[in-house]
Image (cartoon, rainbow, N blue to C red):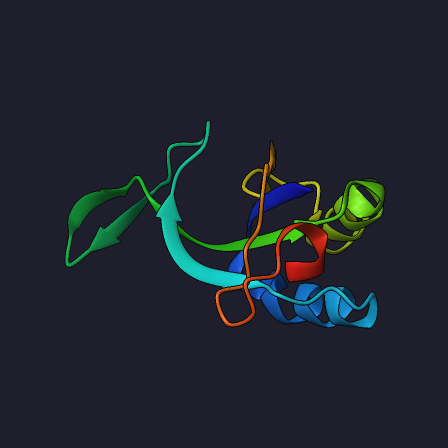
Length: 112
């Protein structure tokens, strides 16, 4: 099993959720986060004062998928989230050694 953590633009949340649900991916965890990449934010002017906004609003989507579906899900995320501009986000993939459904005590992929 693999855990996918995707950090994407907020406006990509709904299209990404729809695409993942069409692929019968369930068990999404979604968080509103702030962050910055290489661009370190942007400069804004408020009432004549310069303010450097070094964190931007992003959406973090976490899900755990079977190994055989990993590349399919990653390609879906990229196809929806990619604009070709700075700030499109990142995808992190980590190994999951176990999953336990609390209600039934099922383990492994059965618990997904």
